[in-house]
Amino acid sequence: MAAEAPASTPAIIETARAWLAQDPDPETQVQLRALINGASDGDAAAIADLHSRFDERLAFGTAGLRGAIAAGSNRMNRVLVSQAAAGLASYLLRHALPNATPSIVIGYDGRKNSHVFATDTAALMAGAGVRAILLPRLLPTPVLAFAVRHLNASCGVMVTASHNPPNDNGYKVYLGGDFEGAQIVAPADSLIATEILRVAADEFVPNLPRAAYETADEEVVQAYIGATAGLAHPPRSQVNAVYTALHGVGWDTTRRVLLQAGFDLPTLVDAQIAPDAAFPTVAFPNPEEPGAMDLAYETAREVGAELILANDPDADRLAVAIPDADSDAGYRRLSGNEVGAILGWRAAALAAPNYDPEADVANTGGLPTTDAPGTGGEAFAAAEDAAAAPRPTLACSIVSSPALAAIAASYGLGFTETLTGFKWVSRAPGLIFGFEEALGYLVNPDSVRDKDGISAAVALLSLVGDLKADGLTLADYLDRFSAKFGHYASSQISVRVTDVSDIARVMTRLRETPPDLIGRIRVDHIDDFRWGLNGLAPSDVLRIVLTDGSRVMVRPSGTEPKLKVYLDTHSNSGTIDERRRAADASLAELDRGMRALIA
Image (tube, rainbow, N blue to C red; front, side):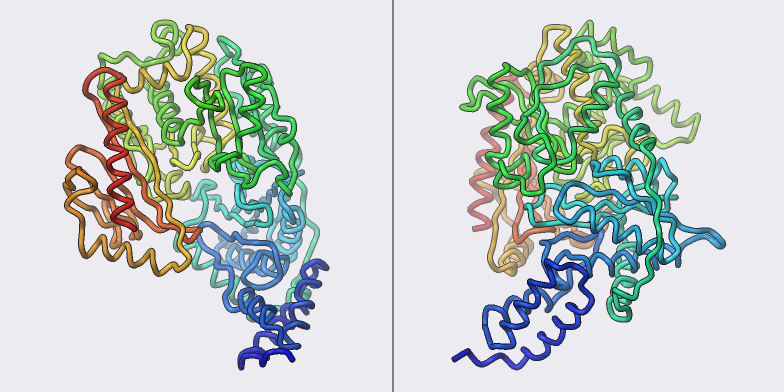
């Protein structure tokens, strides 16, 4: 006999039936009917599944929407996306200038349902009275971010879940106009969310008006390609590189950019180059995850590659690997902090007044001289006074390496720390380069106000080609960085929990009983971002500063049930090897000490 259903079962079944009546997707209809039938028969598993799907709603926030594709208000599906589109349309119409028609450009990647979510959005936007423009085919996220500005659109939506598991999808929202194509931040997120909830409460999805929408011409893609190719000067030397798209949408656009910029095309990881929503060769389509780049390493060994470039599935991130004889794979993936420092140094050097790339590269292999720590600062200050323009600025998130601040100080540039997320990094006044340690880099803020793994690849490939022309490698460049700025080392601790309240307990313990030591290193002070700090909005983050200059950042993950700890150390005493050993020793001590503190 079936178990007796909980008292709330009739209500949850009724909620599910109401959702089913709106659902245009045969696949999710079948799912939901089976669950409703099972719950009606008292099946405990079906009842629990319905509660998981309907007790809450997938929240719309500054990251838009993201979740597993399935039926229910707490999943990604055509009902939820239709409600989101109608709510966003209402927001755009309410905030449009008098007698102006707001516009939206919509992009989509190769994930499951990306195209159908995008076309639903376009039809519903057009039906609501918003000018809707769909990008011509599946394309990388950076092309959508570019298109918002290029087409002077009021808004942009990218349908993607970036490097999430295969069955996930998502909905990223950008705003044009004064927001210059950046991702939404407060209060826009809550205002849009309010409109979405109103639609969900008052409207029946099949009755929402739909209309014909426009499809963008290929010109917008070509404009992105031209702007991105223009970030590099003609190659002084070609690089033997390997590229993987990790089954995403990066390769076609990257190929066209590299050809226009004059680069030889890289050797491809053939099994991962075509878009495939199943991501068959990787357990998790994120180049940071163990095993994700194994095929790239294998291909690189076969061709003796000097460099490996990997985009994540929507190509807004870039992973980089270089030869390493000490690694079993023969290659070492650089951390996001290392790549951020490399590209930040390049950006600072290029921004210096009277900078001559060819002379600089010829004399120092692309490296600024080490005997002029204030290069360009006085000239920048004079220019700023004369033009009253924002100071050229480097920016990174608070959990990214302090190395970027050292670069900015050396070159007399501005430096800005932001909360995590490119929605904040991209808003730094005077920005010329920004990055996040999670493989995100913004090298072209005049064109794209978001991380861009394709433009970052162009900048990196250009740098490596210049180095090669002078008999140097990227490993040499990293050594010269350590010689000029000191050696920076970083690592992370990520603790997954089954009970999210465990994270709150750890954060409370650190606040109420702050440590005097982490391992054997004494704590100097602790900055609490809970109420905001240095102009930043409140955030559940602690920054622990050690007396040796090391730093520990502690925060809950914003997307997963994890506590994240970021460790950063620095040494500028002795030889490069001595600096490296000292920074690594401090890193190991911090790792040991923090694991004990958060256990």
